[in-house]
Image (cartoon, rainbow, N blue to C red; front, side, top):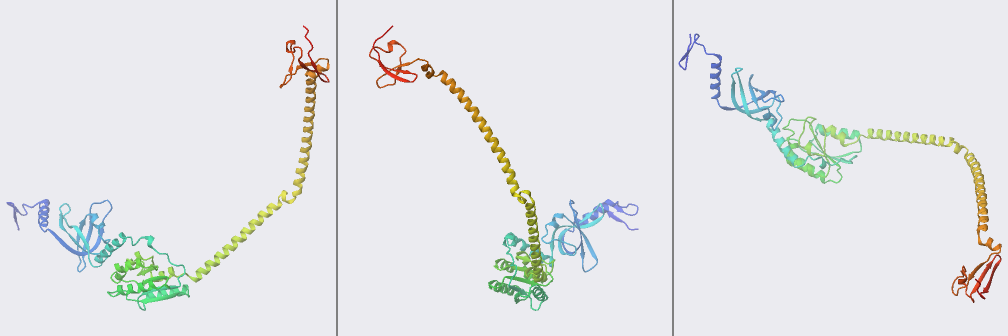
Length: 415
């Protein structure tokens, strides 16, 4: 029978330790291990929204062994490269024992991608730098010509990308011309030769657009097209540049600075060179639609004219004038009748007023034998004599009677 001595107490079948004692002892031993760097491959990532702890599984790709990891979810979100299952990483943390569950986990406080992850992190830093300088701004993008007469093509010698671009472009528009510059598309000599070819094509005034084309490959193979010097040279070009590197999931930095990103070299040829058959069909369709629209417009106008022609005022315009002439004649007769009646009434009124005026006027009074005596005043109008005092002897008088006036001189005065 085995025994153990701890703190003066012998551990045996008769004196067993409780689970909490064992858990506390294990936790204390593990806590003495300190921090450690560990390399492995992520096989499981569980970071639920709203939780304060993310759980990961780190596997040794050489043997069938794994280790449980825990961390703050912010650590995953702050990673320069999005972490996914299968990524190789190096983590830094401390082994932790959870007494409640009796399980071990490595609580990490730092995580770094290695291999391809490190490469992607470096590219991500460069992408953020170029974006901060505004090289990805959509306002810098130059529009592509509708029908380029000459296209510059930078691609590998006898590559599938070259064959795809040329065959698709010539099939869509046989008259298009290419200036092909064959350069390495991977390796240390690729960037300098691509830069020389890009500068030469940009200086050629006959080149309307430049295509950078390469087939798919690993991130390491596509690395030249994320070179900072190449990206800045693309931005500095005065000729529109199309980036057709790799396949749809591939996104080298040249895709961000180019004036147009094509998913594949074939897609680049389709987006740069218009389809002659499709354009002809479009022209035919537009011509047919224009002719149809014109015919419909003519028919509508003819219908409007027919409706106008069927209106009575246009069918028999003289009838309307005749009706108006009769109405005008009736109105003219009524107006003449009303005017004559008004004139006769006013003439009768004038005669009555004239008779009353004659009756009340001084002429009628004079005709009955009365006279109006006026005193003649030098340099003035005659004044009516109302009293004998107004006409002393010798005064010249004007005596008006019914049929005229006579002059007299006052000879004397009678009271």
